[in-house]
Image (tube, rainbow, N blue to C red; front, side, top):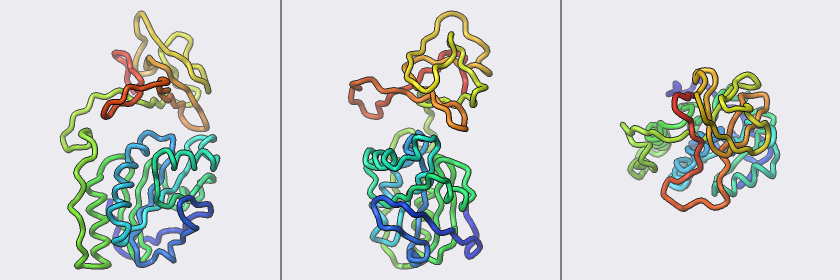
Length: 258
């Protein structure tokens, strides 16, 4: 989504930082800034990180500053030690600001994980994208804003998709690693319902219920809630065979839908 030039100023950003001393929009004038709202537990956010890391590596010395804004989806993700561990786990080297009280989330009137905002050299919002995807479009806008600063800047060709599933026209039939079932209202079709806030093994036999209201799951999962929809996370086995694109998965049994 493009935003008209010189119309919306970016708000100031944050207090507690990792990988950087505190930054301000004022001191970043003259550079393009990519703001990424994320959460280390959010699968959709995690899937965008390889692209953001690549953009940081490609354009940091050409005038781009990437800033991750960690706005927690769950209570445990507010803890700074957990955020720091997530940053290390995903190998993030660009600045990350902790937004545990959701102040930046509200300042940007943000509503989604993940969300990306591009800010031009004059401190104005120029582009936004919500959710996964649009990686090529986002990089095109990065390059466009960099060339506004230096029209003759030599830039690399746009990234090829980092995953086969990101290629245009890709048809994907993959298991869903997360399920959002509705906070204390939505239920699963397994006998005994879900076991809250602890790992459990789920299986099912016999006739399936109405999939529209009660999806059925199989696998080892953890259910969590925190003022948001119930979320089921896959729990990896102690040792996972190393394969390209291999990951733990949640199995939706036939007729089940999200």
